[in-house]
Length: 320
Ligand code: UDP
Ligand code: GLC
Ligand code: MN
Image (cartoon, rainbow, N blue to C red; front, side):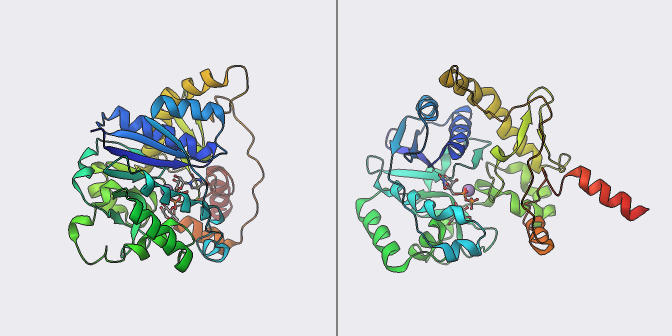
């Protein structure tokens, strides 16, 4: 349908990789909707060219930043002030209904049925389930709502420094008013929840329709060996979570990298697909408490301190 669209956002080339994979995954699962990506001015020309091949509309927007360092520091995500830019999606008034999806989400099954839902439908946030996670939500573009949202930001700011805090305060009756606005968790399955409630993942995980790589470490933070078809540095290889990571890399390596190589021409393009062993750059040191917290949030530093090799060394030392 021409007046319904999936919408995402990328303010830089890394998130643009995510947007390319997301768009391609929507195409692979035969969506009948329009695809829109909002980009910031720092997205490079080759990335824009590839996005134009995948998306129906590539729309340049101003980057909005909450500048709220205190709240962002509490989330340990100083980079997320720019997620205020997401709010521009309400200005896409040439569509009557849209589904916003973070650039770090991946569609593993057709999800066009989301358009049967109303604004504002979203899945619970795994960290605080009375809030919705703003990585996937159904909305209706409207100049009136857009103006009200920007006004709301100016007057109240955001309790988490990002868009999710504003949107939850603005659509504050989400938790209690209409159960139809609660999307099933399989439309926004986050890796964090897989780690915290493994039996539920074992029971329901195979029904996943959208996977959300929420948190500091994104799929593009890893490297991939296309010959061995393996994501490098991942000690959880045997569990079901790495299979989603592998799916992301498979779409990226098979569809996105060839398009990027064409656009880059003679210039070097670092795809992250490498067959040779690459040296691991030195990591900033963390306190053992911070390290423990990251583990518990499913953000182990698989490439560095928490690499399989280091864990093995520790175990060997312990057994001796
Ligand atoms: N985003 C972006 N540039 C940034 C940070 C975020 O374009 O520097 C966009 C992107 O669409 C991303 C979304 O904002 O998916 C939310 O950020 P992120 O997914 O990193 O947050 P998380 O889901 O990990 O909390
Ligand atoms: C969340 C959401 C993300 C949002 C961020 C900042 O964790 O997953 O979409 O941008 O918080 O509010
Ligand atoms: Mn996200």
